[in-house]
Image (cartoon, rainbow, N blue to C red; front, side, top):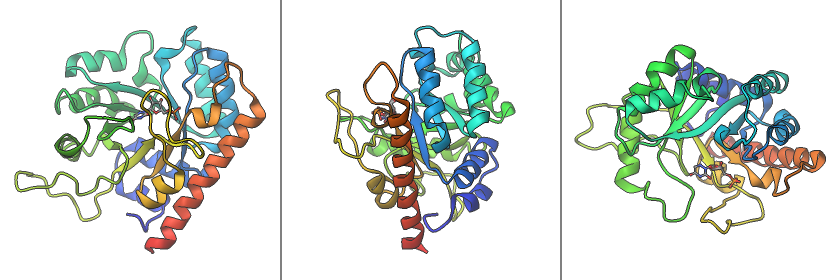
Length: 279
Ligand code: UP6
């Protein structure tokens, strides 16, 4: 996997969202996902418009927007077309299947109708996957399972991570990969696994917890650099939030755009170095 280009790896996936994401990455020369965790619509749109040219994926927490109106989604979709990026709603579904299905398709946000990719915890067991797939698959959506977390003291380690990967392996049509800190192919295989993965098993790994000059925040977040994440740990997509849009309530378009370009460049050159190293 590590010796193959993102474009080539698109052939490993039947899932439409996975293919589209890999092809977008190749086309834009970007493995950067920008996490836009700001709380007002205009600020949200301004950040996305500034970073859009450099990102393959924009990650949202739509439920933190204070002045949310359905028209925000249309404007987000317009920016997605304008800048050629995909949309990932970081909803972290974690409930029983029936409730997760409702949270995914209904309510104010109707996530399934616009988010190409979303994610789920495995804490409630495997049924969350077919539940979300019953809504998302026909819309061409993809799911990431949270196999590990970037925060200090996370319980998603060891046998929890392994069980999560086994769940994903049983639903390759809808699960396209993981939120994790390292590669997950081959994880969780043991005598009790019924499923034998193909030799070229390929899961996308999207990794949060990156900043260039900071090692953490005061609430348990832990940061690594693009080089550590992409070259050394073999992850595919770097997810960067505050490292790009900063702390201010108001956007400085110039510096936001130039930081996005800096992370794009750092992520992409780590990937090119990785291709060289493993080819
Ligand atoms: N996120 C993590 N760690 C995880 C999973 N998700 O940080 O293990 C999400 C957070 C936030 C973003 O919910 O939206 O990634 C990281 O933001 P930051 O770069 O500003 O720390």
